[in-house]
Length: 294
Image 1 (tube, rainbow, N blue to C red):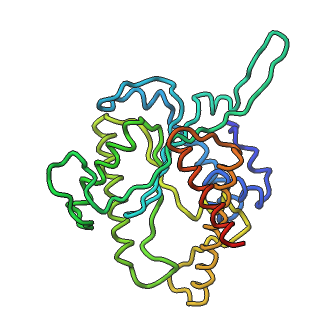
Image 2: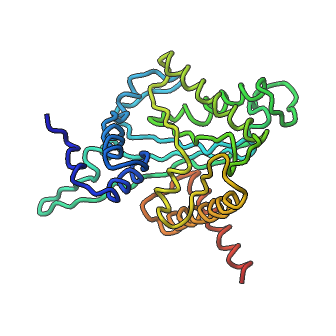
Image 3: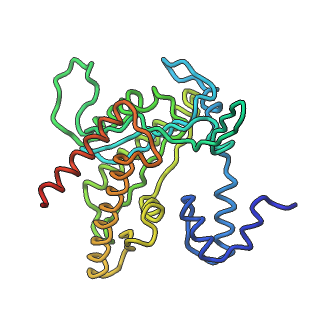
């Protein structure tokens, strides 16, 4: 039986690699391997708002077809960042909204809305209602576990997200042989978030989807072909590690520039509420840096 993705076989290798990068799929391998990866990746069912609404989240009224609410979490301990991107339920079917009048029919693109954009320090207790004296930052599991739960229960799940994107962490940086203690702390917190979300899903209290995101794939998507993503495998020499470090710095600066341009020019995104305040802060810092460089 013919598949709707059979046209992939007519594509060249470079075209398949571009499709894979644009869809967050592994872009390495031969043509047949890439076709297999793309077919498998694009055949996965996409979690819909109605699927989330069928589950009961504590202390919140559910609304069907309320749109796609995507939370992205940039892992960290003292500097964990998260944002919420909202798309209307018509985003996938179709990808634009049609406006009809008595004489004409026009099509307007669906613009994503960024409603929340914030940072948080999870190294000390987050429960503000606790009567216990506030402790100094601690990295023991007994502190991290309630912080992970409080973070999700207070900042993420009340918004009933359809998808939660979690930045994947690595155990080594730049191919170094040592595993840094700070890396282990972030990995531990990441694992706790996964465990808590899995518990919510297993108990039927949340029906969304958790999506791990590799930073290297984000780099390939945002700054494809412009800079080195900085990914170095174990065992490579110091010269390659230094080159990867330089590539990482360039890619980070480039990504920050893309976000700044999107915020400043309103290109492809609309900022609302608290996210707009953060956007104004990003623009202000960028303008201040330009003034200092003159």
